[in-house]
Image 1 (cartoon, rainbow, N blue to C red):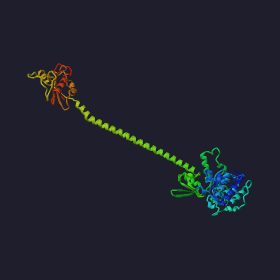
Image 2 (cartoon, helix red, strand yellow):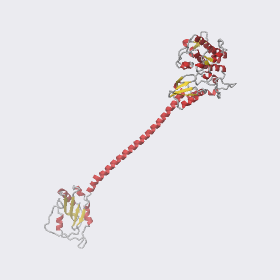
Image 3 (cartoon, rainbow, N blue to C red):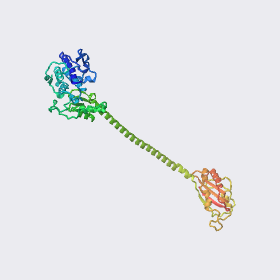
Image 4 (tube, helix red, strand yellow):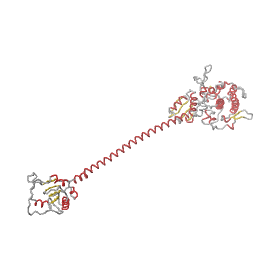
Length: 482
């Protein structure tokens, strides 16, 4: 509204309230309780003066009534009249982030700003309570369209029920523009400001949360008074200015659940319930959650990494342990059973070639049954029979003729006696084999075993008779022990 329109509404409402309070009435005074009368003049309507349910109405209640939402007296109504007049001429509501009216609209009269500042003093002990004086003073600001109230001295607005009116407790922030005379009615230092229009968010970014928070922050910072106290850990911290409080919230010193008290208005609520500070506390909380999530992710990654390394170590250890067990088993097996078998089965005999024997025919020599602990026969002439019937004289030195076969040729077929193993000779059995060789075949064989085993001896006898040597017409004799 224009100043004239706002004064035309607020003066008759103020006069109506003065009469009601004079009769002892206590009332809920807020915008929803104002409506035109039958004559078209705005007045207070008791039937509309209900407990405020919307935020816009609650902003216009005096601070001392907002805690319990109770009806108020004339002193409380003075605050409500000033808050409604502020909304009419600025389009904004009263609160910690409010601006001075002339910071929003420099064309507004200084006198109007001064009246609003006196009316919306937060501490009722320093607030005027004379509605008649307030109506008269507002009428003189813009009398063009308003009804004429009774003339009452404006000096009555300088005294409260409990003492002098002190504008330092006004909800209006300190003056932000240098007066022509250099004075400051609030007694606060002058703050240099840039163009006011630059502080207003553009229409394009009005719905941008970041732009809205920046605008809210700028409005809060326009009030340098240390007016905010925070209760934390059963202790009061502060008072802080709005700038300092926002810094504390941003640094996570205070969170949404801490109690914030405004020393100017006397309001005391959790930070989460303060319209002006809750968004900043919420952003700080989201940042804490984000950082906590990032730390949790890093911890989880480190834990997974460590777990993976531990699992790898365990897996490698198990593999190495298994490999060690298998190696021990393999070498133990090989060093005991397998190696024993290979060694035991590798029956190599010591071959003695009787190349220097003079064989002579003797009587009484018949086939016999093998010596050395028992023998066995598979058929054929024995070694002794051939030896006894042999009349040749053999000399390896070559004096009486040379043997057709060398020692190596005679010993070769008997060197690897696998037939001993095949015939089932135990490892601890001693076996002696004597062979008479002529024309590449065994013409006489005698096998002895110790301990005696006719079956094994007979098997070896058959095997030896099946061996072949290089052919020679002379008879040669070979002794072999296994």
